[in-house]
Image (cartoon, rainbow, N blue to C red; front, side, top):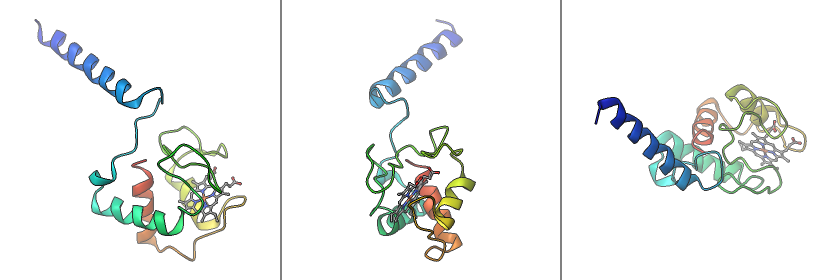
Length: 121
Ligand code: HEC
């Protein structure tokens, strides 16, 4: 078989594998907690301490606020704002709708750790 044929086959197998693992959800699942790097792990701990009272992040159902599952894999945040670091940072710092501002509870390092974790979802 030609080299490009082999590559095509490989690509097909990878796509099929991803589809099987992902079930009918279009986005890939969150990175397993056991695979987080130190910064992401710190972000996960911060999430548990500061966000988990109101948000599920590994389950696709709302708590007090919307689920944050796959938050950066979707085109838009629940509000319709673009799903990017700037908007999520502003949400955390200044609040949004019923979500309280939390700028006085996280320093710059913690904010970066939180974002690193949210990117694994
Ligand atoms: C006291 C409850 C509460 C806490 C604590 C909380 N949130 Fe929220 N959050 C909400 C609610 C309610 C909404 C929906 C707000 C709206 O759009 O009216 C929301 C919305 C959001 C959104 C979507 C914003 C948008 O534009 O759609 C993000 C992202 C978010 N929260 C992240 C976080 C993160 C990260 C933390 C922890 C640092 C956190 N939240 C802590 C209640 C909370």
